[in-house]
Amino acid sequence: MDLRHLKTLIAIAEHRSFAAAADAIGLTQSAVSLHIKALEEDLQTVLFDRSTRPPLLNAQGIALVERAREIVGLCDGLTDSLRGDRVAGILELGAVPTALTGMLPAALVALQGAQPELRIRVSNGLSNELADDVRKGALDAAIVSEPTQLAAGLSWHPVIQEPLMVIAPADTPGGNDRELLEALPFIRFKRFAWAGRLIDTHLRERGIHLLPGMEMDSLEAVAAMVAHGLGVSIAPQRAIAEPFPAGVQTFPFGEPPLTRGVGIVERTESPKTDMVRTLYDELLRLNKSRR
Image 1 (cartoon, one colour):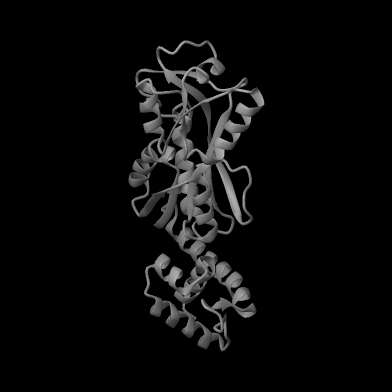
Image 2 (tube, one colour):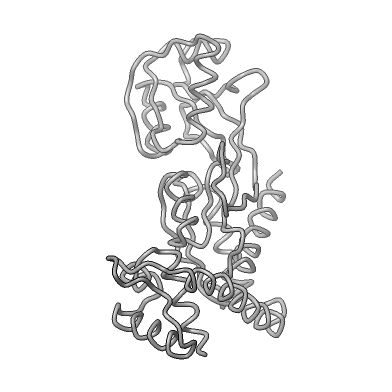
């Protein structure tokens, strides 16, 4: 039995079709079909119901997927033990935009030197979209805002709590968060999805009335609009040298100040846990050094 065929079977289970699995693991669809045909011949059983389109795993196939994950995990673990502290392979990582311009770049630079055989391919998106991609196997892990609910099969690893700040033009009068928020139109960061629910709930509970303003798709764009006097906003204060541009004043949002959790989400039974752990440890180390 070829280990590659088991990995192909796992990919089909995670991506729900032969075509999607082929794209994910870098094979042609015909090669994926040949892998499954060879696996069925080796085991002398049928693993898919081919009367449906796309073909679906039957009972034997579902059972084999679980055993295949165990086998692949054991083989990966054996390789890791022989490799010592070195981590090698490709990690498909998702990240929210604030992480791409915040904590992630420094971690990637550090890992390039410490783990030259580890390759991390990064894509960006919304927290909920990225977490769903991790659940489906399209991504190995993602750096996202702390979820209010975590889907079955996923694990959450917190990295940092970022304080939420009201940001306003430097000359805006106001001695607290309410006065600043009600002084100018509110510029919403639309990619602030999960934390946005926390913010909206807090605004409603306190009866803070916002003036309608713009909606932007990046924290840098929001901060630039605020710095030019076009409105106010609420944004996380990231652990970087200059979290906000010149010309912006900040005030903690809430009493006590609200925070946004940021961390890594991965599948509970991921074959790439060693890679995720390496990245996670580096993010923790960098955040600790900045305190």
